[in-house]
Amino acid sequence: MNQNRRTFLRGVGAAIALPTLASLKTGSVLASAMPVGAEKALAQTATGAPLRTAFLYFPNGAIPSAWWPESTGKEYQFSETLESLKPVRDSIQIMGGLDNVSANPGPDGGGDHARGGGTFLTNVRLNKSSTDLRAGVSIDQVIAEKIGHLTRLPSLELSCESDRRSGSCDSGYSCAYQYNISWKTPTTPMASESNPRLVFERLFGAGTPGQRLANLKLRRSQQRSVLDFVMDDAKKMQQRMQRTDRMKLDEYFTSVREIESRIERAERHGDVETEAQTPEGVPVSYAEHMQMMFELLTLAFQTDSTRVATLCLAHDGSNRSFSEIGVVEGHHELSHHQNKQDAIDKVKTIDRWYVQQLGKFLQRMEEVKDEDGHSLLHNSQIMFGSGNADGNRHTHVNLPIIMAGQGGGDMSTGRYVDYKETPLANMHMTLAHRMGVTDLKRFGDSTGTVGDV
Image (cartoon, rainbow, N blue to C red; front, side, top):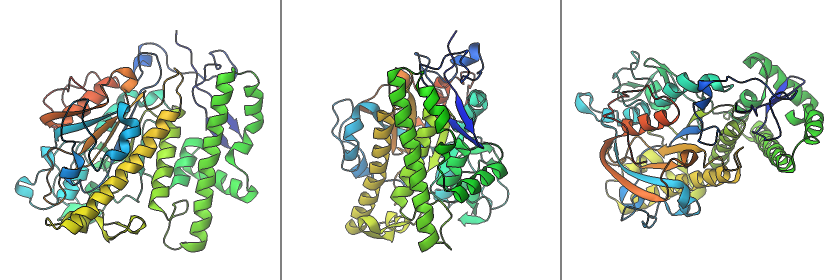
């Protein structure tokens, strides 16, 4: 029988989920129970390590000519936009030819940004209304429904901006469509969290949201790190650990301390500089905010707090400017470049910046070792993409998609493959099957699974 290697340190209102450690065996006073039997094969790699799935969304498509390599296969040369992914070449696939026709206008006319984001993980046409929501269940929630009971959190929904679930946003579509990529039911989007402090509390706090808030106030009043509550127990546990596990635990504690310190620095800066405009815990810097959310996602996977997650980097149609990289105009405004070279070059700069942030995250996932000796990235399947292809023309075919991770060793990597007019839903269904949702026979507008991934 597989040994349970999940444990929690508890103390003074805090719970710290630990990384998987070989030293922690069933029967240890520090080990906790986990479902046994056939269910344990769900969302696992061949070595028994957890298999994780994440969906990362970036807005407004990309400049196609700068995104796609010139040739397919393993000998491809990186394109201008994707060049920063060279360090993780062996862990990614560039996927062409994936279409989401459910986002096409049809008789509904305008609203491509709402449709692009709202259907990216559902592949079901939206009801065009600001009040009568009708979408579809997103693939992350299909997976969570099947395997969510195996972890503390069935799924994790993150964002780098506050979500909206009411009002009219894009040509008569509800803001809920445009701001939410994860849907529990056809009428209920999953609330995403953009405040790193609250995400941290959810992952490492204890009790209800109200209790977590009380814990937060307690820590602030005492000016103590959350780890100080449990460090004595950790030190005692370390004495009984194998050397490799002691090193892993030290690295893990350092990561948790660092991210809490970054959150606290962001809060202090916000209190001083942007108290009225910035929610507590959200950095002023977009890059810092994004990397903080990536780090929290890494910790969630590292501690097996969840095995499925979404992260919306910005809603489709976002008009954020990027003055820190020399682009003062809004992203959405520039994406309608009308073939003006200056605007195209600025969109390329933004596209490269988003891919660079992805690259940093993937390298971090590669650094963190899992219980089977492989990296977190090796034991993951991570889709990075947008619901629009060419932002200037609002197309939804040949979407810019990158798949990262080896899926525990089952995925082909280090290549650019063109799937040629394949429904994006086919890829979603394939990922779900690998997570153990083998009874899923149809999803959205799927026509089957993708055999070569």
